Length: 506
Image (cartoon, rainbow, N blue to C red; front, top):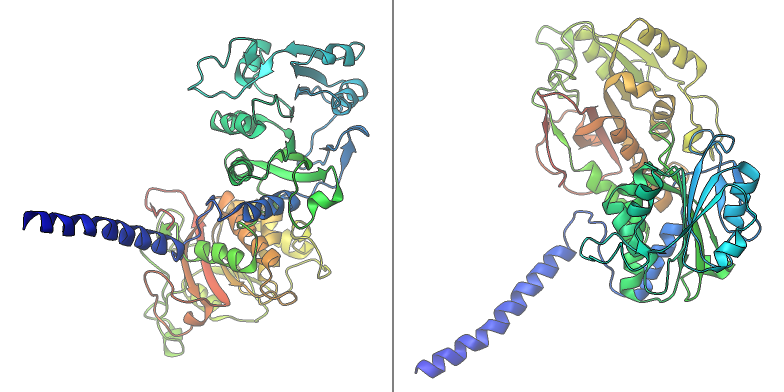
């Protein structure tokens, strides 16, 4: 009897384990949230994701200097994100045989102080007569704290080399694979953990496809992803040993030269990396996850006053305008700016009944063609003069509302480019997800996500998000917005102040 019961119990154990595992993976797979940095199913998918990442630039550098015919690198000299080669600069380079053009051009032509880290004696002959070069003979290894021999037996970490050279930062860093025993992604991983890449103005790395294994490809993707999101580096140039290496999928023995700059600042448009494979479905999922996950709570919303004549015309609505102190709409002397093709909107009437001064504009942008880059959108001269006049009087703009079909994202880009929002407490945007020309294209969705991230970088937090169709005649609904809509009314507020409660992203 006892043995029979024990056998039944033993039989149930694998069944329970299987059921638990199935439920876990099923829940993870069908979870609605966007989860980055997840390993993919196979090596082909990993290769496609990595290739997509290095093919799509984050920053458009218009002025570059070719660092020699034997180099695949281009030095960015843009005024916004580039470096001034006429100034005193420091370059550190992990050298390998046959790759000296980059260092020689910068050291000889631009007098850049160049420190060559090498283990092959051929470097001494190669740089013998090159001015402004200093040789450091050692084998570079990762700063892995579990490796107690990392700074002994003729090998050193970047940390130790910088300490030895008495440099607190590097203007330019060029990295190739240090040796057959050390992978470059491993060195970069620990440099990211030590935050050494945050002070680098330009980074140039050589990515060699020694193998197409899943772990190798994922390790490279994870490092590049963290370089963007944790170290503030932006990819602006990729060249390859063969044009075929940049098409369709990666191939073994392909070599890639990747050039990065330090983040140029929130007034410059930066395209965020693709959502995994960068398909329309994945880009839409990431964007909607951001839109539906508010970061901050608002306790009091703007409503129409009881004595307002508007109450006979309009139902009592919330308008997505926060009244919480210190950054909410003030009770008196509030200044608001409205961008809308309509002569008089309901929100304008509500704001005036609240005692706000309302400035309205129906043609807010300079004339541009449909293919204008987001970084080139600018407010019209008259609009910018008006807003500058308001700010010159030491007045702060309490609220900007953008309700302009087909130009909503363009106006938001112009406000970000001109730096206007740094003097604004709240912004409302009626954001349409379907572009008037390209529809719901993956690139357009990625641009939208990038602009929302730039808005957050300028200090704004999303506190309210509802479909545009809910704004008319419906009360605010708490919690997640079910389903997918083509238009959302997004409300942002400057994310500082003790009166506001932060909420973790879902």
